[in-house]
Image 1 (cartoon, rainbow, N blue to C red):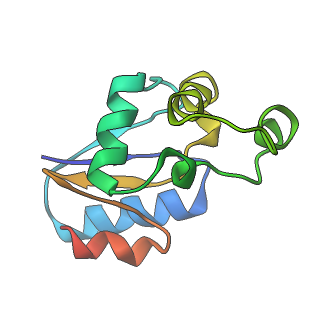
Image 2 (cartoon, rainbow, N blue to C red):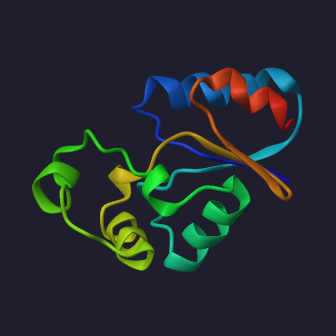
Amino acid sequence: MIKIYHNPRCSKSRQGLAILEASGKSFETIKYLENNLTSVELQDIIIKLGIKPIDLIRKNEAIWKSEYKGKSLTDNEIIAAMVNHPKLIERPIVINEDKAVIGRPPEAIKDII
């Protein structure tokens, strides 16, 4: 089952959702700002993306700049920051079984569906 971690207020996330809808494939939409992800879920996503936790952070968010920027953080501390402040998570994220992409640009989603 394809999953999209979606923020309806984000234009790139809405574009990613439109790509999935146009594909005709069934998928699950997870509004991660309403249903917070656990650290285990985030770790699984990060592994599927093949990136480091810091690469999933939206570094221009005010909360990142005020609370975390310039600090030496472990991967677990970065994941905890995303659990506590889901707005920090880059979006959209699309997962198709063991493959995942961050939909920036949204067309990257086509590579795994």
